[in-house]
Structure formats: structure tokens, C-alpha cells
Image (cartoon, rainbow, N blue to C red; front, side):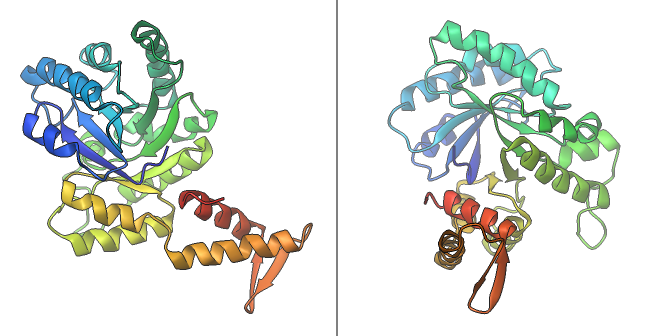
Length: 291
């Protein structure tokens, strides 16, 4: 499941749901959590379920729903309403570790049977850094919990959990605790063999800033990003898609190792490449949809 771009859409907004149908995002996240007032959550659940069912089979994007945290009374009603036709995945916020993903998976086991869906068909993307316990338990994702296809991180809820006045320093750079959260999400995703999905870029009007940040993010190891506005999607898709130059270098490395089976190092145009470069080259080709 390719998750270069995941666009948030408030599930209680008919206008935004309809506009999202033509989105070029790899996935839509119909939101039942922060963007929906508590009094409107029953309506949002129904609208999300209806939208997913109505668009099933005629859309290019995967349909995810961000439920409310498992620690709240809203989580089970969210799941009970939205698990059905057209649902591809759940985004789990404020997780305290892999145990929460496993618990969610058990709920989905039952709800898939009720809905007549194939077992394990609904996947999970977890927001792994929004609680202090979640930060301490990032290592738990090495257990590779079932259904987990992506790990993302967030700084706003973590700041609230830590009591921070801000998650940034006076110069605008992330404070150390939140750099740790970003890096921790990368480690956790690699250990879980899941995709690392970067957090949102807040200023949706700053396309140039978004592009710079996405390119830096990709260099760090993230394979995709959360979008909070439709205008961000094309920039994100472009930045997280390997360029022709990237693909050419990757193909050269793979070909060189194929021509010298059993070797640990190859030379290409005066540069030496070893086995880690081969692994990265193969990942680049896979990300581009090439073998």
C-alpha cells in the first residue's frame, strides 16, 4: 500500500468530502477526532461510512478513518460505524505503543466478520509519538503488530502531554524532545517494516517551504507525508516519488551487483558502492513501482 500522501478531511463536512473525491492523494483520512466537535461525532461517523461505501470501486485513493483514541468512549462507536464497504484502513491517534495496535486489531477481527470483509483487510497507520508512554514504548513496534502498514508522528499533542509552552525554540527549530519524536518514528517504522509517514506541514499557503521540508524529510528516510489541505498533495507526491536520476542510479547499482554475484563492493563511475547501497537502491526502485 503506497502512502506518499495522506490528506485529512473532516468527516462532518459534506463540501470537503465531495471535493475530496477527485483528490490525487494516495489516501484520504476521514477525520472523526480533532477536527470534529464532540456533538457532531455521531453525524460524522455516519457521513464517513456513507462516503466510503459510495466511492468504493470508483476512486484512486485508499479510504482511511482517524478514530478517537482507544482510551476514550468514542473509539468503539467510531469503529462500529465505519468498518464496512470501502474502508481500507484506520489511523490510530495517541497510541501508547504496539499493544494498542494489537488491541485495535482484535476489534477489527470481529468487525470484519460482521461486515463480511476479508480477514486482515483493514490496515492500520499509528500516530506513535503523541503521548509520553508512546514515546517510551517506540521500541515495542519491533514486534511487528498485525495490520500495521505505517507509522507517523505528531508534535502538538506531545507538547500538550509534556506541558511545553511550544514545541519549537526561539529560532523556529524543533526542540530536542520533538526531534527525538521524529527520529523515533523513523526507527519504529524501520523496526516494524512499515512505512514512515512524516507529520503535517502547517502553513498550507507556503508551497516552497513545503517542498523544501519534504525533500529534507525524504533524505531522512520518510516515504510520505500527512497533508492538511488539497493544495499540498501534488507537492508531496512529487517530492516522495523517486526522480529519474534516483531511479537511474538505483538501476546502475542493482545491475552492477547482478553482474558480480558474491561480491561485497562494486565500482560505478569512480564511486564505490557496498551492500547497504544495494539495499537502498532496491527500496528506491520498489518505491517507484519498479522491480
